[in-house]
Length: 480
Ligand code: HEM
Ligand SMILES: *[C@@H]1O[C@H](CO)[C@@H](O)[C@H](O)[C@H]1NC(C)=O
Image (cartoon, rainbow, N blue to C red; front, side, top):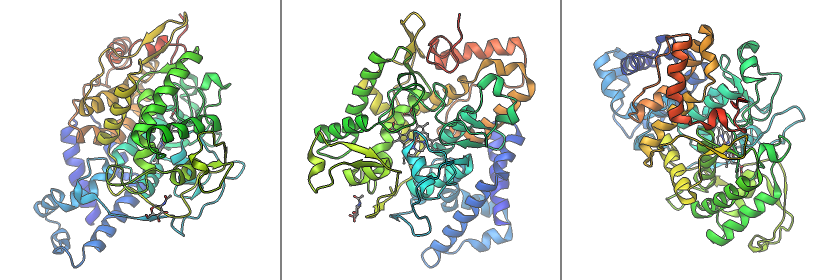
């Protein structure tokens, strides 16, 4: 009862704010079993936590009076519900310190058919069962897991996980593999395979998620298509950056320095180098995630990503385990499954929103000033978008548009596919868009055919540049 009222108010206000968004899209989100479970859990947690400290507000809700409810939505309850829908969490949404690991989620190494991939965060969640241990998970499961262990805001979780589902998963079941391709996942039962190929998993290269110049994974084209496996040599370089720039900690300064080196090395070595929006944003964002999520406590509030924390989450096992070995820049590592530090670790106390993540991306970007784009067929550099905003708010909006712009324009020849994709994106990404006050200027999705496709292509050029179709490393590269 309480929950359905909350949903009713949300549905109404969101529909008004997004006239172009179909009611079906919003409804799909509201009906999402994982979302509902999470909403219920949070409401219960919230009501429980409030007893004794704040005047009980339940009676108002119980009467079902809409004015009372709106009052609540404008206040504390809003803060609780916000992160679920990806609206910006307020101070009230902070849930304080929480220590991990939790006994209900024991570490277990993955089995032979379990998928693991380029993301140490998701691998850790799967190894502890916060998302299915198989490594095949829905958007809702990933968002809930990232929130539970890392305090990732649902706006950010939805953005990343929806991107994963679009490029490498199945947008109807919202399932994806957190590693490579897997027969347990199929995009629209195969209907999109001709355009997108067999679902690649989140490790799919050059589309939304996976990109070149990663912190500890090699470039797709530099390693025979292996962009998943942890590279001890790259981790060693990151460790050296930590010693040189972070007093031995994996601070923002240290990882920015590591990124600059990685970008230069990749670009020089990789003839199919691809570093374009939106995937370049994901790569730079992932660098910020190292101190942003793996710190013991909150980054910026005494939380530090030290050797113990980083090696555990990355599954980097030092060959020398004597107490001061970490001070040696030539320390070598091997790989073991990713794990929450056994000695204990505190998750950040404030949710990381899209706005914070984009601020982090901007910090990484402005430090290294990497050219955005990719290598062309003639080995020239094909540019990405011409104008990239340099403030987090505008860049966040730009990033959302780049995700829409990153669709294959071929999709617009098929009515059913366009509406599926647009509905899916509308329901998963729009709340974040709204929270940031972005102007939604994605071309109307109701038109089909060549006129619409041309309008779309012109619009998309603005956000992905020519690199999307003309750089050889792009997932959308077309031979002239
Ligand atoms: C919504 C969920 C998430 C998705 C879909 C996702 C996806 C990805 C992908 C595709 C990459 C490869 C990017 C590249 O090419 O460099 C990546 C890398 C990375 N992710 Fe995630 N991620 C998610 C959540 C997280 C979380 C919660 C954390 C931290 C707690 C995290 C930390 C990282 C880090 C540090 C890397 C860089 C790996 C490297 O060393 O190369 N991610 N992630
Ligand atoms: C995190 O901090 C706590 C409290 O200071 C400490 O007990 C624990 O060992 C630290 N964990 C790591 C991985 O550094």
